Image (cartoon, rainbow, N blue to C red; front, top):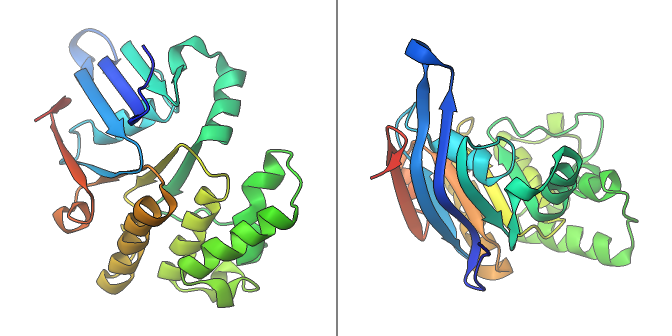
Length: 228
């Protein structure tokens, strides 16, 4: 199976089981899903519903027990560990609840870090893209500051710019507003929505908050390992 031009990723018959015997847990129970390109999709549900497991399988962070996941035309099940690591680096971006910025680097250095880790040269085009992202995300005047000198909302916006610098096919945001107050949360969610609309980015956000999910173009609700 391959993704169509309208799809950034697809899952068919996706299952994930943990444990054995009486302790067995069915985290995913036959998920069929298409994620549209250039869209902002929210996956929501209560704790234990399977939403984080689904994200991990779609992102290639976890191997499903059954079924297929296709991202950017590639069946992730055909890739070995090294190839999957390279694929994630080149095609997938991540934004986490905890920001995960390196404290010894400035905001600007954190943004271009994925390019350095990937062995790429930080050329003028890369620097211009970093400046453009920082400007759109409202942190252009904070690029010389280290994370400890930034507010939580500013740190998360730097993290979004870092995730977007490689122009990934998919951007996954895992509870991105979990550590933010309501004002900063609204700003971050608005920037994720703009990433889809202005940059043509495909954004997939995992959240348990209805207010956050309301920013998305499409909301997928999960319960007991199934899309309901």
